[in-house]
Image 1 (spheres, rainbow, N blue to C red):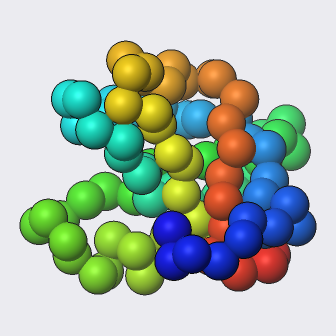
Image 2: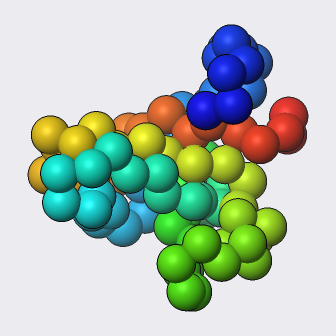
Length: 88
């Protein structure tokens, strides 16, 4: 997003905890918090959003899930790629 080449070591696979919807007709980045569930799976939980552009949403997140402009949604329990803000 900042013109820096993507790195694989800043990506993890997780399971979505909730359905995630994109903005209609736009590529959307959903901020997520990572945690382990009762079965020790890595899960991605959407961070509740505040006002548009609120920096606190990003500050509470471990990374983001990208939803393409032509994708309707990501369903709960679907595997997703989380791009991390920092190594965890």
